[in-house]
Image (cartoon, rainbow, N blue to C red; front, side):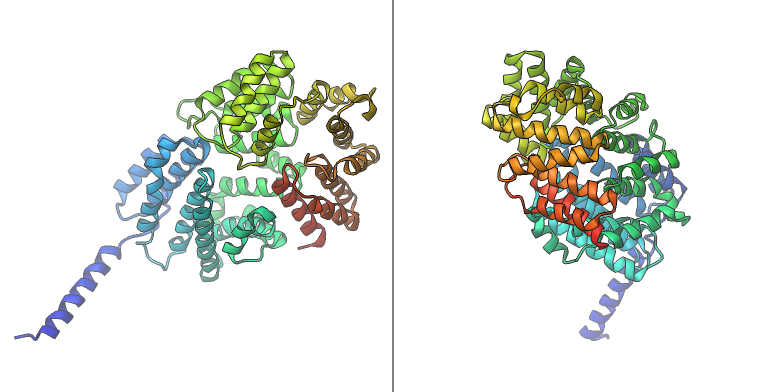
Amino acid sequence: MKSFAQRLICFFLFSFCFFIAAYADKVYDFDATCQQAYKEITSLRLANGQKLTAQARQENPDNLIPDLLDSYVDFFVLFFNEDPAELKVREPHFDQYLDKLGDGPDSSPFYNYSRAVVLIQQACVEIKFGERWSAGWDFRKAFSLIKDNKKKFPAFMPNNMLYGPMQIVAGTIPDGYKWLAGLFGIKGSISSGMALMQRVIDSDDVYAKLFANEAAFYYCYVMFYMQNQPEQVFKFINQRRFDLVNNHLLAYMAANLAINNKMNEYARSIIQNRNNSSAYMQTPVWNFELAYVQMRHLELADAIRNYEYYLSHFKGKFYVKDACEKLSWCYYLQGNMSAANNARQMVLKRGNTDTDADKEAYKNAKSGRWPNAVLLKARILNDGGYNDQAIALLQDKTAGDFSDPVDQLEFTYRTGRIYDDMNHNDSAVKHYLTAISLGENRTEYYASRAALQIGMIYEKQGNKAMAIQYYKKCLAMQNHDYKDSMDQKAKSGIARCSGE
């Protein structure tokens, strides 16, 4: 008879063999069905994508890529719509995906990569729902996985698609988020990160082609905000001939960046001409973007209708205070003070103050002060790129025409900003310097933004020393609106000028 020890050894050997047999056949196979599912999902045709992932599971039950693709679906739904009811259902899925994706062979580059993607998606969702500490840890785990994967599989191009942006962001994190940089445990580099991203964009690698649209999404945002090259971004979009009608993710990217680059009519065209099929994920974010476009052309009634639709259908908190404030402005400029005050009360009650725009909206509402109507119209028109109309409202005025010191400061800054956008650099710098003098010790953002804009002007002129001087001046100003976002832009400018 076998001894107890022999039987125990046999039991463990059997268990080990069973374990190996159970997991040996798990694979990461981005087959044709999964590739089509990925294209559908990243166009925001989520239901179509899910049908294809179900088909992929039937074709190969041991393929783990469908679990990765399901994570994309949950991410898009939660990130764009921020519905707490959806969060309860979908948030537990991320841990399930991580468990399943961890069952595959570690000899595949997708072993670490796929889990890193899920962790990044989970972290982005956690930020949206105020779980910052959890988000920080998940970003750190994701970075560690990608860093290890890059060492183990240096030729695996998708690594660069994630590692590049993470390095860039880590190198420009504002002081308010330094704890996150500590969690990363890395020293970020804009130049290194951009080189990695460029490698993906320019590659003919099979995976670079598969992930081309996703890589372009990251690349455009980084080029726009970190590299301060909006002209290059839209040149890139046009050269690549992205499908901005049938790919809603790329349409959102192009429209959102256009709005932030004061290309109002271009943004309007994208939003209104996109494919309106019910096959696409439904999100009130489109109403939010269109309301911005309409407000910036002073189409106040149309903007009100879209802001109100957004606020009645959106379940989240990001940019809600901002939307309420913009709604109050529209009513204010119409002369409907009852509705304007009601919208202002919504600023105080709804949303959160996680974004700089929401913080400013809350501060403005608490102050009880309404902006000067002429200055507000000039700001709105300038934000839409309608500079001739904006400057026409201000050109016969001086700071002395305004009795309120805040209005004097805003007039000076706004005039400079309009001249800046019209490429009248000398006039822009002159007004910006006055704005800095008037406002560098105030809490309004105008002086800090003026310093940032002067830095950008000098950077474009090739005077990097002067650019750095004004970027540092922007950083030195404290306790003003938009502090985090402006600090990030200033740090990016210093890094660019320093060649970091």
